[in-house]
Length: 163
Image (cartoon, rainbow, N blue to C red; front, side, top):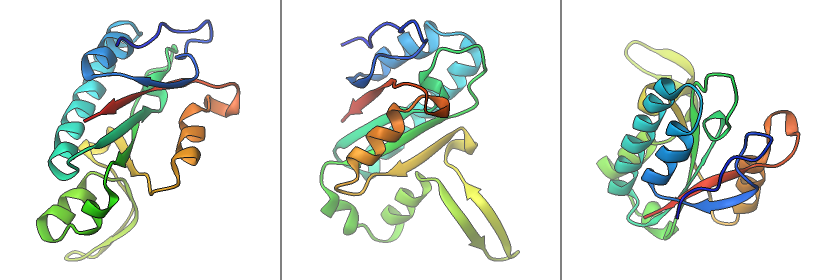
């Protein structure tokens, strides 16, 4: 199902809108300004979701940030919150699978060794997106965050990709 058309405020109508990657490309890249920059962000999203599917067998991803707004400003990133269908599968991850999961998420306050350094934030896909994990019961909080238009003026919709 294609994403709805932009509103007069240059956002998607409020609500979660089921979409596949072709729908997202059509509305958020092809039908928006700064297509070249959006193409790069879309590629990051496509790669990110491909890696997510290797670690999380089934779930949904909500796409947010400036990428889902049709404004004159160049979008510099996008946000993805992952909602696993079976939280128990994630809790049982170990070793390389657990490492892969953490590689898909934005991490804050990271200390690494050899050489020791502190990083304020580590983001997946070269910093082009922020990846978050929705804990069970936190869906309403994430939905409110994803629906807020910059400076909390009005409401917007966002795409939901399921696998």
